[in-house]
Image (cartoon, one colour):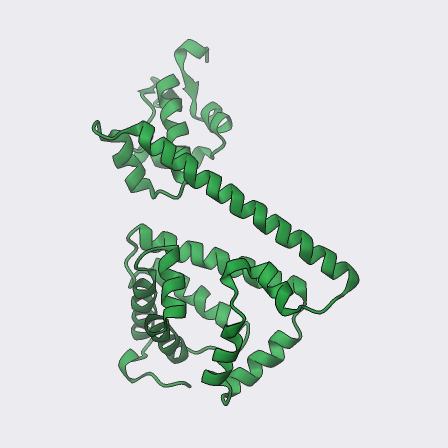
Length: 264
């Protein structure tokens, strides 16, 4: 197909770096449709279509849900220059954060090379501002007489610096997905939310076996303890309450009454 006749969906997929399946989906939902069809009903994209696709990708990379992207692109009153400036700011912040993480990983690699123990300073380097040394003593005061505390101390004591790096990466990914679900308006009682609740429970079970009743009590503690609620709400406003609602909905769906949950 000549350039002046437009581009096929395969050519556009290769050009913008997404799958043909993604382009088909975006066409079906009206987010980035092809402007023309051939006599055989194949999609054909012109230059304006490709330009819209690039804008969709920038918005998506900045964390906007697809439904919001479509509204932004189709609203004639939206100041796109202002949104692009905001997108650039968000992307620069993400780049800075990733550069900090690369530096932390490099320091961990150096420590692994000499097989040094993970000190409090090492943890602060790995977890950055997410780590507060006082949390350890607060946790021991709250749960120190429980079997779960003993088990968590045993498991964490055998973890290497590489293990802690994986814990940090997994926690960051989970928090990002939780925040994305809250931001996108995912129903806390939905299957999508239940999958995130299962990941949350699995992340705790890396340290001790966490039941649904324990998870309910932990989620409610997030709401009550500013150390937790402020952390989650700084990631996404209202995230703490969304997590509580999702955990309790998952518990009810699996025969657990959150109002009578006990630590067992």
